[in-house]
Image 1: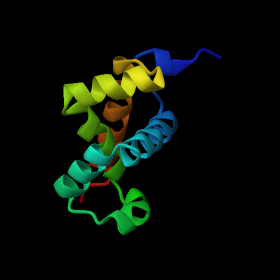
Image 2: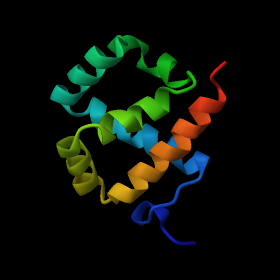
Image 3: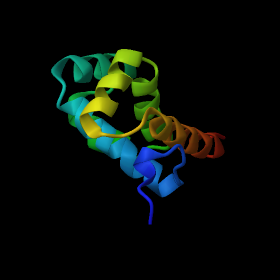
Image 4: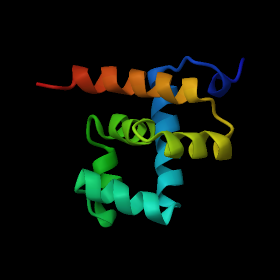
Amino acid sequence: MPDRRRSGTASLEEAEGAAIQILGWIVGQPDLITRFLALTGIEASSIRQAAAEPGFLAGVTGFVMAHEPTLMAYCAESGVRIEYVAACHQALAGSADENWP
């Protein structure tokens, strides 16, 4: 099976896994986690609970996608292609839209 992290396609399951990995990376970056928490309004102690909410993982990928230096740093450190992060965001954002009332 090809490694899709190096491609521009992602299933919803793959996108969820990628977003969780991105979140773990964000948590390990003091400046980024501070900015992420400030922008989302989530308290650090509530991240696990928030991660179960519809749309949260799309917000994680959107956060990384919205700031090119952050996106480039994540991709460089993880070995994941920008196109794959974009595909994951698209899969998750579509999924989040389906959960919107």
